Image (cartoon, each protein chain N blue to C red):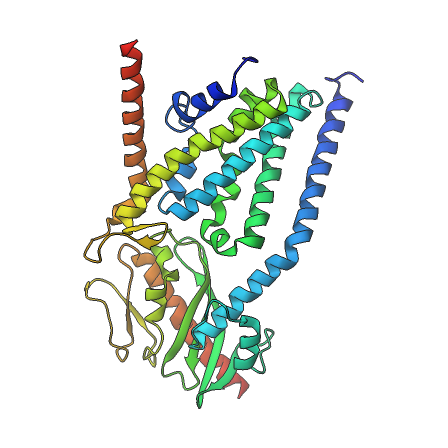
Amino acid sequence: MNGDSPAKILKENVWTNNPIFIQILGICSTLAVTNNLTNTLIMTLGVMFVAAFTNITVSLLKQVIPRKVRMIVQTLIIAFYVIIVDILLRAYLPEISKSLGPYVGLIITNCIIMGRAEAFAQSHGPLISAWDGLTSGLGYMWVLMLIAFVREILGFGTVFGYAVLPETFTPWTIMVMAPSAFFLLGSVLWIAKAIILKKERGK
Amino acid sequence: MKKDSLIYTVLVTAVSAFIFVFLLSLANGATSEKVAENQRVLEAKAYLTAAGIAVKEDMDVEKELMTVFPQFDSARPYQETTLNGKKLIVAPFQGSGLWGTIYGVLGMSADFSRIVGMEILSHSETPGLGGRIDEAWFKDQFSGEYAVDGIVIRHGGGKGDTDKDNGEVDGITGASRTSDSLQQIINDQIDKMKSAKGGMN
């Protein structure tokens, strides 16, 4: 796996091995934060940041950390970056910090980050690991943004808080609630799988 | 030292824990002033809104707060002021919502006949449902509302409630429990403010 090119990693993390619709990781936050585009954007940027820096740090420290305690140290590193994100949001973006509330802290338990640290950074150099973390975050981001776009426009009639649908539009309350994320995620999974399977059959 | 020996393991874990936590406390220390300032601005804005003043983007809210409440003292249970010849009493409140504690500030006319303004400081209600108590259309309903016998947050109807003299505000569809909780909190708060003011006079 050491010969992976950056382009191949990008394609895998964003499409063929996407953390959301192929690996089905990080679903809790997918359901929780996607009813509004602004929150989703900040949340996914947070995940990208944490994933990239966790991967760099784990990759740099992998020779030093004894195998027995590597998971604990990885969790420590992840928690460290998540708290940094939380502190920065509270200091410089108080409004967003207020509306994201507990979800920032929950990035710690996002399996994507732990998964990439364990599966990739443990066996690769720091630079390529950073790229892997960044692109994994990107794979997470575009799927969440897609879901958030549908939920916000149908649930509130807005995009990034700006009204785009006419006043007469009746918001679909269900889109604001968690179940709609299940329906939409299911649909995304279905469509993505259908496209991937069709390509494979074509070969 | 052998890498899988007990001493090495304990040492590495302890040292890395120390370093990371040390860096975090540095970051926390560096931003704590900014965070405290954000909190003060948020509270100052809430007091101003509760006193019926429209907060603008470029306002120096802390200065404005001292102008509106010349005797502002956060140690006291409520603040009093006279605006445009009307005596006001403003106090922070808290109470349990559906998921967590709702914090806010409530402003009343000094004779407790009407609510002047209501602002939510923090809450953990369902985003998009109960969380909408923090939206302007909902909070604005409280200003000027008749509240001699407390208020009622209405369910159903679907027509809204523009009558400022009936002591009723329109609830949030899909958030009956949050509406009920908030109604309880506001009414308790009005009673508390009445007895706090009565006890001091």
